[in-house]
Image (cartoon, rainbow, N blue to C red; front, top):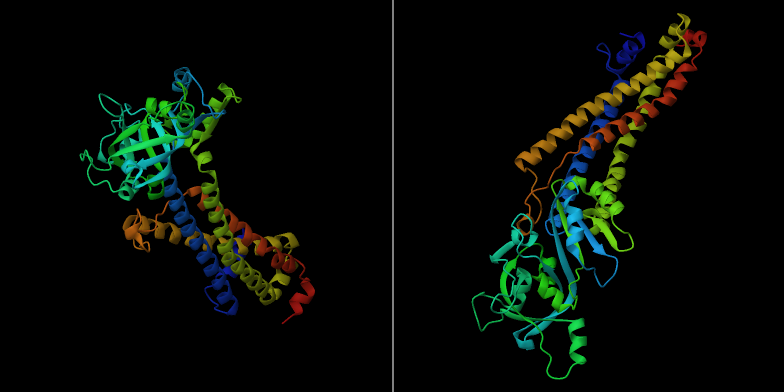
Length: 419
């Protein structure tokens, strides 16, 4: 073993002495341990909430959305879909039409509400159609058939308008949709305007705010409602790997005309929300890093006291031929030892606590009965653990620079004579 590491380890933890310096060094290690543990646990919990929100959002948001740069949409989506299907990682592609319309129930006597109407291809399979996976009542059959076209509502909106049975021919399960384009056309024609009526054929449950503001109808009905004349608003893609979204976006952006199409990933669609959560994550990390910063000041104090206590030993070492740079290395190594022990113990405790929470749900979430989870979610990202470990180690090394420099300034003659 290198004699510098041997001396640093002896100064760090001597078996024969238990002094005030040892106590301060122990406090420094405890501070580093506590800071590392708390940082790993908090980052893992915030990662858990981020993944929870992301999974909730992408349950109804597409992985990638290609929209028309024009508000009027674009024609011939089939040719675009063919290009997209040849792109790696693409699992399903579906065109859609989206716009705002007035939602009227009870012949207009009971109420009306402005909602976002989405026209979708209801014939897609369960795995390809997001809405079909969220149905709680009825079925996703929106085509007109022999009677009225169908519509599916969110449970929150259905409860608001009082739908109790989908089979009640005289109840509020017949609704009307009026778009701005339809209203404008009715004003330019003679006679009583004829607005489309829809039969409620099912209810879905995604998120209360989303459920109350969105309704789904068949794609051709949406094109007629918004007077799209065969055009669509865009196409939505689902991938077999969510992490591949950025690469797929880059590939499609290079193939498509930027003047006609806008390509967005799941992150871009809810960018403000995701960026806010990431800001909270690293903001909380900086605040909790103050614990480690205080521990680093303890390292400065404890190593400075070691320099004073071992002044005679340092003089003897220099008299024996040890250079000043090696004296500096001894105390830098001691700082690394303090940081290394604190990081090792803190990381072990942090990962252990994360495992216990993930496995046994020891810490419940306040108000969990009204939320989709009942305990704090935990997701350990080993990149975060590495950043914490490296950051703490660098901070401990910097904290040892001043004591190491002061130790190297010791004059051998004065140190040997000093008692």
